[in-house]
Length: 169
Image 1 (cartoon, helix red, strand yellow):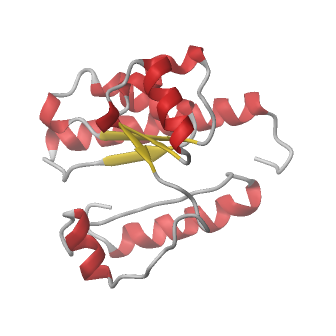
Image 2 (cartoon, rainbow, N blue to C red):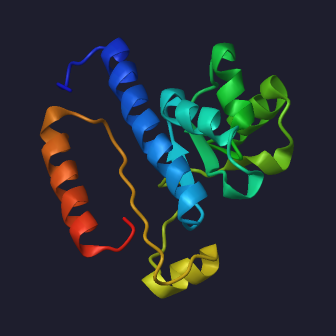
C-alpha cells in the first residue's frame, strides 16, 4: 500500500492477509499441534478472520486474541471487542468506558499506559520470557505499524529469511 492508501483499501488488503494467516494458523493448530498462538492487533479487520476460524477449532486450539485500542471502539465493532480474550487500552477512563459499553468483566480489560507515563525497563530475553511464561525457544513474530509498499519489501524479506532459519515458522 502507498502512504496515502484509503481506509477501504487498507481494510481490504488487511482482511485478505489476515484471512490467509488465520487459515494457515487454523490448519497448523489442528494438524501439527502447533504451539499456542497469540494474535495482537489494533485493527478489528485483522482479528475478524481469527474470530471466524476460531469458532470451528477446538477451544484448546484457538488463538488467544488481544485487541489494542486507544479510542472507544465503534458499536459496530462490538463483536470483535467481545470476542477478544483481552482488550488493551492506554487510559483508566478508556478501560472503564470499554468495560461499560461492551459489558466486559474487568479482568478482560487491561490498562497499559504508554511511555512516558509507563517507564520501560529492559530485561534480558530469558527474564522477560520467564515473567511472561514463554519458553526460551518459542518463536515469536511481531510487526507494528502501517503496512506500506516501503515497509512490505523489508517485512517479506525478513519473513522469508526467518522461514529458512526457524523450524515451523
